[in-house]
Image (cartoon, rainbow, N blue to C red; front, side, top):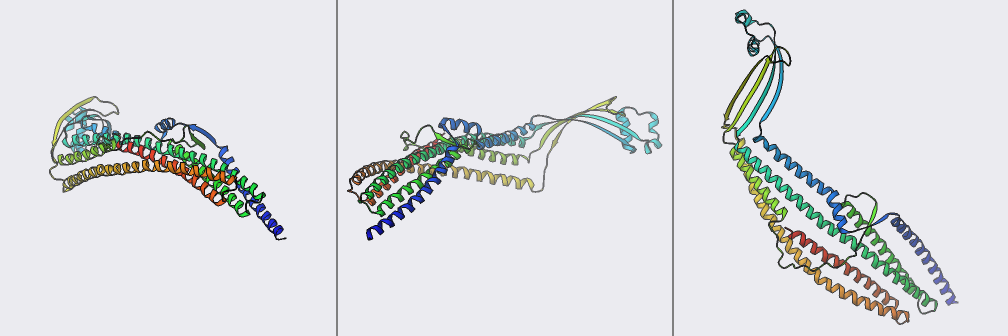
Length: 453
């Protein structure tokens, strides 16, 4: 009677567990159907790089920053190119001086106009003047230094754009490897799920034959559910990694990307002799930025010197709009020296000197920090290399242990708990091994990024 009661209780538990698992499987199938509803596109890393080069927003922003710096540099052409203006002015006046001057410019003065009454109380006089005016800088020392500083800034921006592209290449390497790792995890978990379901069938058969307890069967079912949960999370990671690659390419389509090749160990790189090169584009850009601050400081000091500018004009006068019966010209040169502008120029020179000194310190700090980062990356690579050997051996050992325990479980010679523990360990060792491959390849890519000239 006790045996029948126990069988009834086991049957109820088994039925309840199967219902829960059925509900979960339906939910999982719903997730998979959503994933399958999206387009899956195979893509190589070269294709990703090409699209990033043409479409990436960060790179486009960097190019616009260069355009800004180039426009600032072109504005300094004003120290060479003359300033030419054309104007047409019309006036109507009874001002004695203006009226007399207007008639004089128009060339229409007569002896009667020198009548004191007319000079003091002139009639309303109209005057229309067309003026062509030119101003040509001749000596403007501070302007020359400002132009040189603007050129340094433009060249620094060019180098920063190059470094931005180098960073995006590195970021593509990392994102593509993350996508490879995500798919590798899915493959591992799918195989683990097959193994777990096969063990569940064995457990069910053993339970029917009376070799296993209900608790053992439930433990196997829980393990199957755990693997399914991990598989679902791995598929979510595929979507996340795919979305990031699409973001780098500025692709807004809702597609799932699949790498054309799987995660594999890259060629071993020699790291002992790697050094940070001062020819690296971002370091050179920092040097040029410091030179620009130095040049601006010199420009501020040159404002204490006089400037020499030439000027000239050609004028047409008439009492009718857009006419010019009378004309004249004027040309000359002006040497000006702003001797004292309060303390404004002194303060500006002191500020530019402080900015220059700060830029030198920032350059030295940046180079030192880059070398520090390289040293850390070297150690990271060596650690990943050692870890790669260890995780590979651990995976092979756990694989063999899992094979042996599975065979013994089929023969009824192995405990269910020991089999599940070995199965879990084998899965973990596989995932650790492929994660280490990612870390190893990432460390190589990072070293290449840090040492690229």
